[in-house]
View 1 (cartoon, one colour):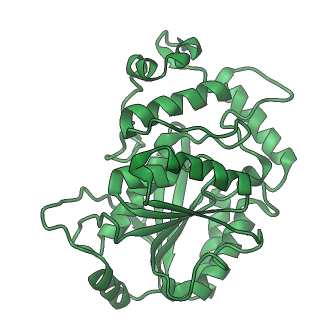
View 2 (view 1 turned 90 degrees about the horizontal axis):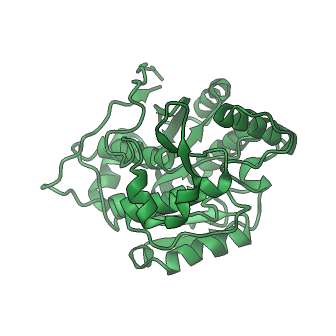
Length: 334
């Protein structure tokens, strides 16, 4: 599988990301007045949010979802992961670009496109953004009944999300697609933000480092600035092992999916991922650079369908919008 390298520009966020510019804190404060007490001057004297404070981050996200996405009701237990919205949106925008490659450079939208979110979490953030931006259908899975309950409550309290998002409990934490995907199911893409750490100790160490970077302060027992219960952040073997298990299982559902994908935060995991994808005989593998703030990451996507099979999939499932045009991005292929 030949690889084309593409340097990630310093501009960072995707061209269609609604949060490319600095946050309009005045507008967000109007949407969510409780945010005001967390606004303070940064080291440059400009108003900013205390990103080391989980309560501030959650209120900021509520304001962002209300102001930019029209989501009025977004709540879940404080113990659950509170995600950075711009980075989550970027993942979906790049996957939309990927779908457009076999669709005459147009992003397929609407109910004909189904996305599986592996580990939807209590916040339900990927389905929310995908529904608002592209009108896709979503299936969200999670191993936590409480997370499924919270996600379903978000769907139920926001009319634009109803009949667009289904949530399924994965009862066996060793499985990813089994018991979720039926033999006749057709899923256009899967997305996943896998657990990053291999242990609670590693998660706490990472949190201390993050708080120090954000606030300049050392702390022994920091609050996670994006919260997150242990199952959302930690799994045996960490990110690398989780992704490898996903790849092995994906082979058994080769004809059910157009594209599989996952975030890969640790560059050191790429070698093992590529080797396994070659072993399971993935037909195509794409590596898509991403970056928000000072953090660089990437999406790895793979398919077991040939180009001809992908073309046939598109012809039978997607409706080409002849009036639409997509500003697609270059994507590196491995």
